[in-house]
Length: 90
Image (tube, rainbow, N blue to C red; front, side, top):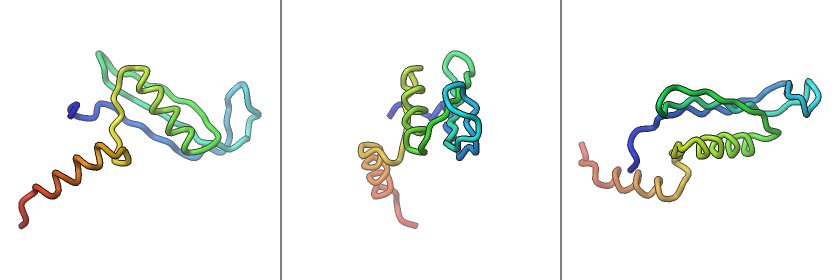
């Protein structure tokens, strides 16, 4: 394992994208990330769909040297299931 999670990632519906490449009022999804790596940092962006916003946020974090933890990744899911199976009952 690579330790504790050192970032926050939020994807939320956004009623209008104020970016310079798209008209104001076009709905989409805003992603925001904060992370700690030799200091605290913040970034955000806009995408048309939830999945592309999530992917863009994860890619951004990856470029910053942050390992993204996700319950949906098969390797991490297997580790979580193994830990649950080893946990004593009661």
